[in-house]
Image (tube, rainbow, N blue to C red; front, side, top):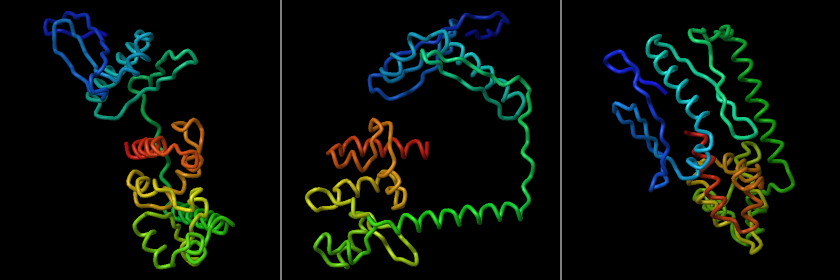
Length: 243
């Protein structure tokens, strides 16, 4: 990486990676005559990057060029980084000054029709899920737990049980949220804390497989007692969604 000095000559630059004591990513830029740029990263990141310094240097070089280009042109620009099977990053850059092709304006009527169709597909899919045999009414779920319907509704509002709003059918409660002791999974309130108030979001997290859980679903991991790993995975999913 090079950095132009005030005299017009180029000063040799360095890109340095260092392990952060707190294991939290942070960056520190130093305006020195050597042009050193230090980045403190988690130790795992440093271990992954150090053997590939040339590739990382190339990425940083293109990044600096794109930052300068965007500032001068006043428009967004970017580039792609491919990682080969050996873990070596390779840059695929946009051509400088290349204009981003504009999408043709959508007709308002066509857009509304597309949105309406998407909503209808979502409604039909939700109805299909809620009609499954594992989906219990409030009365049936209360009977399964040996409590009253009033108690079930109170638990639903406190996120102690998972209840999906079926509109015409009322709330439906997945029978599989009950553990081997006949109790709802104790982690449910914490999942809501991490994923938000939407029961459908928690439902999707539980039935989908996650790389953070070695390909297991949230539900399977809970059944195997991997509660902390499940909560960490939920936090990771939430960070990815809103990061």
